[in-house]
Length: 480
Ligand SMILES: [Fe+2]
Ligand SMILES: [Fe+2]
Image (cartoon, rainbow, N blue to C red; front, side, top):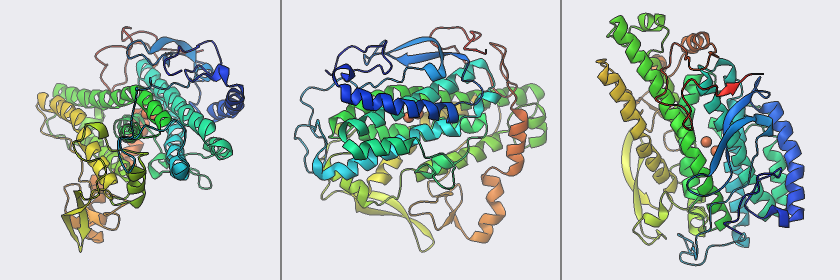
């Protein structure tokens, strides 16, 4: 069943044998109605009728897993696709390490597993909700298409989690699947579960930083869940990771193209002071310090998604074998971590200190550290762009303790370069480190839509190439 072909002509393309499971098929078709209503209400505003050049997942083979065609988003085929099963796969960590992976939910871990799936599932529709107004200010048809590609795939990720809930968690799972359609990003009464997914994504700089940082948190969580001893979850996450790579590509190249355009425009105008905000903004590009402030915000909010550095929940999930570490199977240790330690940073008596704590308890901190490493590549490329233009400015990740609401640093005030300061100093300098109202007003005014294929807004460079072999000036979105 694992490697069966995907039937693309049905309402729910899948490789999980839905045609042979009428009860499951009915449950999902019923859920589909609610999903469709949610998409129409909370999906991209103003573009539901547009024909968008989208890729649709049609197979789980390494090459050729997607096909490209013009699709109206409400008619997108949100399939259910599991990566091929690995023969004789074993549980990679915890008390059951080395035992055969579970094909059904282990009873003793049912609640823990369900919670993990619900939390992951909740982030997927949340980001669609956060990004729903961005189509209106797209800087090009190419970018608009990328936004919508990300949106439909986040929708499919919700499907992936809902399938697991409905298939493996009985009535509880069906109830959770319903509630996933009822929460709303930023809603006071029924918000999405995690903080970062209740923030606004008010402009395209925010969108690109969100896809660079917050989708990368998604990648890290999926990597950890891909190590699950619960095999259906592992296989689902492995396939989702194929799509996730594109989301981070959108973020990395998006920020890179903004930085490139700013550096070019400054060089052309002979401006070499990156802090001459007025002169830079007058060129119709985004000043580098503003990019840094937005970056500080998105990075710090995203770090909160990893949870408290020390966590018994994380230890429990690992010990149960239902969530592993990043690249668990490649790590050379006993995969149980009874006696292992891990260095974490804490805020103690007004000082930041490294301390060694039990490795089992610090798995959140470890995954966060892996995340920070993973953020480096794109940053280096952005800085090369700036350096090559002869501008003396470097974008940098703020310190992990900066602007945190969750975990060891939540009660402190720490500068982007890692100094502990008091509240008065924080209040005095905050506006240099995080976006201010004036920044948002500037971005709101700057971002007006560009609908001519092949043309780009003043503040962003063209990409190096188009999508799926099409030229940059291809009509990626056909407006009705
Ligand atoms: Fe996702
Ligand atoms: Fe994503």
